[in-house]
Amino acid sequence: MTADGPAFRLLPRLEPENEFFWTSGADGVLRFLRCAACRTYVHPPSPVCPECLSRDLAPEAVSGRATLVAHTLNVHGWIPGSEPYLIGLVAIDEQPDVRLTTNLVGVEPEDVTTGMALEVTFEPNDDVWLPLFRPADPS
Amino acid sequence: MTVEEPLERRAVISGIGQSAVGRHLGRTGLDLTAEACLAAVADAGLTRDDIDGLATYPGMGTGTPGFAGPTTPEVQDALRLRLNWHDGGGEGPGQMRALIAACLAVGAGLARHVLVYRTVTESTAQGAGGRQGIGGAGGGGGGVPRFSGFLQWTLPFGAVSAVNWIALVAQRRMHEFGLTREQLAQIALNGRRNAALNPQAVYRDPLDLDGYLAARMISTPLCLFDCDAPSDGSTAFVVSHRDYAPDAPRQACHVNAVGTALRGRPSWDQFDDMTTMAARDAGASMWERTDLTPADVDIAQLYDGFSILAMVWLEALGLCGRGESGPFVEDGRAIARDGVLPINTAGGQLSGGRLHGFGLIHEACVQLRGEGGERQVRRRGGGPPEVAAVSNGGGPIAGTLLLTRGQA
Image (cartoon, rainbow over all chains, first blue to last red; front, top):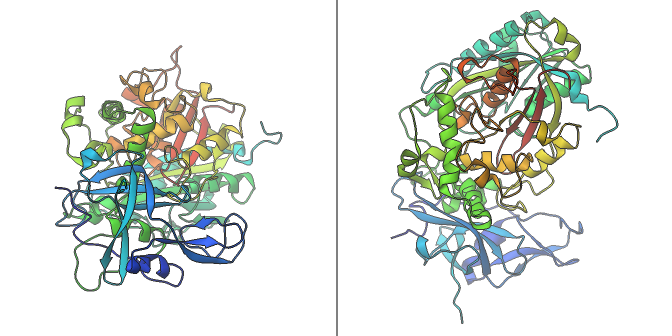
């Protein structure tokens, strides 16, 4: 059985720029910064839009749907007590050059295919909601 | 081609030196550094008093224990150097950024003879404990640090080691190009064959394809033999103005061009092309600075902290076509010492030891000088190689170097 992630989660430090992202899952919705001027999604969070250099950015909800770019099954016990877990690199549907490194859950390694459709699911840890991804519900 | 001569072409590597290299040597970084530096200075036919520049990667307080060697102030003071130029830092075109900076300093007249070193004591620092991920990922409990910057995007998901980030590159290459584990194995097997002829190499026992395929997985598709091992050792060079080359007691290795570009996003997971990352830009920018072409390269020392990186570099340097590194290395013949393009002739990092890029530069010089002994590569006609390409780095970190035996 493949685990949802390592036995112990190292967590991000919440700071003014990243807090919205790491707490976004509290209501089950994934959000990224988006430029009000040119509508580009910006990730990781930044005070300036890298496309048009506008500073008018605000968090905006996305569908939570993504496509799998690449994956690996981590086997080595970097974190004691861990069972093998899947690490995925996913591209969000709204703007595929925005990617997240994440864990793939609800799927076994042999069923993972590059390009598969995924959807977000959140795992709360302390004051952080980690966005993990599972195979998308076809409906 | 550029109209003006690249500044780095005024530089030569006039001397090379290496400390003892091994696992768990139990010596301090400064001790190993002194050994390598004094050897390089003597090799260049110089004395301590001739050295007026000093450079290292990565400098102060960087990385996990044993990753950063002594700082330039520590080495300057230990050797009581009187410097006109000095530089240490971790941001730049790969680990060889220190060597590139030295070339530019020499070209600009800021210094005449620059000592450049890279020292690791990662093996001793680990002691008997297992290898740790970046961030020192350990058990839970109170006082566990939280992470900012890039690491916040990977560590929460257990992507705690560069092997996880690089495994994604390897898997993506399997998807896009049909790369196989048997092809990947050839990088490791080639390194091990060459390491058998390198007395300094850390792993010299024979390794065959069955042994490779039977090894335990670390992060699929990368197994134990796809990963280099923490080592102890120091490598040093003297970078001099080319005016000194005729007076150097050994064959000076001329710097023909360096590659420093980073045109994609500087990120392990946001870079536009996951199959190349920064190697693409560093490789291309080097060829923009020279009339030499990939067809002129006699040997290549390609960064193989993970096997897949050497394959990425084969393509990024134009030594084979894009996506074609798998078939190129397929039976191991092309990259062997008697192949069309010998690579990693001292064992690379996989078997030679994780000297973090500098061991590869050292071996390029050894080969151009014709001092490789049993593992010396001969061109058709019997002479040593004339042109060597060297690469450092993986992911968003990349630098390249083109060395020639004489002045090209």
